[in-house]
Amino acid sequence: MRTICRAHAVQPVTALQSEYSLWWREPEEEILPTLEKFGIWMVPIPGTTKLHRLEENIGAATIELTAGSLRQIDEALPRLKCTALGNLKVHSA
Image (cartoon, rainbow, N blue to C red):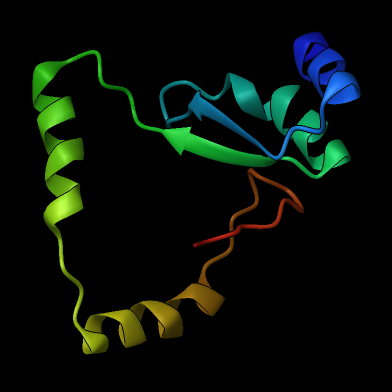
């Protein structure tokens, strides 16, 4: 947290890439509130310490979503409620 504050004071930070998963939730305690305070985006990366997980992550890059699939995702998103992240805004490219 202090590193983020010091770095942001020198040069505005726009995003932080960090491991974040259901099994490692430490960012929720201090890091996410700090990011929210400064308007910094969190870019979660899945753990890749195991070869089969790395292969799954790389394989995700080959997924092609149809217009119908994207429409279904857009329709489902408003029904999802993510309480663990509080009021953080989700940004997509």
